[in-house]
Image 1 (cartoon, rainbow, N blue to C red):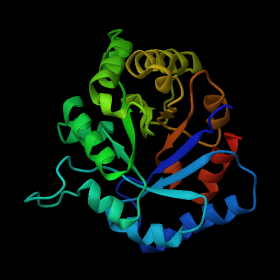
Image 2: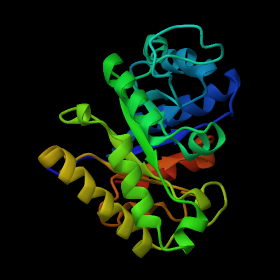
Image 3: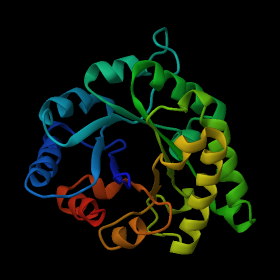
Image 4: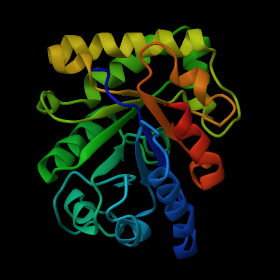
Length: 249
């Protein structure tokens, strides 16, 4: 049986309480359709509890956007995996390029956060991707596969997780790699996962992210080894997010 696509929306630092109406609209529409994809929304930490309450009993899962490796402590402004889980989340995005670049996170830091997610029972979505300079230098495959190898601890073997490939230069830029470029990287990622986790690595979904829109979603989701999408801006409005979800069916 082919695993379902996972379509996850990353709201980033957007959304207030009123924005929950968009999440409710997504859930209400999915309740009336036969869309085959698994669906998740990942709001800012301030909205996790309220969104989990609003979406309770629906098909839409709720996730966090980051967590700290430690379970507790004097880390002002940070949030532990345990706190995300306690607020109602079931997934967490880790290693996003905006964290790697803006906060100096290394793949080793990401791996420690993955361990924290597993400790808490959260499903990690681990992000990887190359910059434009790295792609133009012919290093895209080496950079991405290196991030996969170093960011995913062996403890993931047998656990539920996803990898999200997001070419840094495509995030929010409106630029999208060709289908051939997407497939090349996804196939390379699958090779690392299979080598590291055996049969389990053959089925873990590899999402594509980076300017995913209703207009290009169907073609991207049909590409080899693409097991879903990590959607940014287009996940903020139900009118944009729902066509992407339906493209996976």
